[in-house]
Image (cartoon, rainbow, N blue to C red):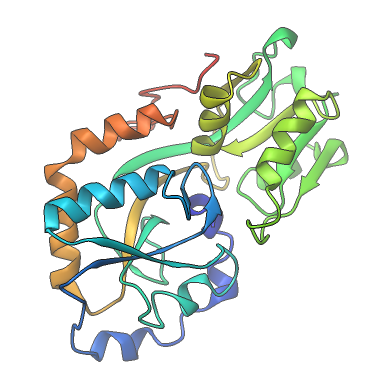
Length: 277
């Protein structure tokens, strides 16, 4: 769900039913394996070949906990949490917005935001949607994601090409389609979640650049702290995950960098930028 940031737009659809019941259940997390709930085709986050950065982080945690890592695969669509974590098919979601009401969260392990992606050759320097340089530009948007609010505020929706939010990632990749449309000059800029933008720019060496999108007062936030999700009522399991994560935080941060994930500090200032900056 953008995993992360995109999930913020789906929380209302998924609902919070069952939270009170889950909190009363005795903690019964498996101690013989680290069972991860994940999407089978959602790079840079995860895939069934275990090539995503969330797969790699799961291996780090599993090694620290002394547990082999196994997976329950399910596409990141409506029903993901209900059919995986809440169904007790698995015990850990690797990427969720910190504060997501569907799950209890671990400590955050990275902080990123939405970015504006454009062709390097075009020299577009805008980082805010109120910039006059964007007034006549064709803009790509994943439907119902946080930048929508600012596009409406600045009257830019007539210039928007929309890409579907909730798709079965085994068959469709809206973010990759947006990147290709920028390359093909069908649109001029795209608004993407930072880890996705950074990954494509770094690993495909594309002639594109990306910069964090500026937020505005009294508008939807554009940056998110990303944590891991566990079931309510499992504080000991959450404590163990937090302990392993804290011990390997530097290694995790280096791993994120190797995937091109652009990071923000606690004050929301860029620590690392996407390739092309």
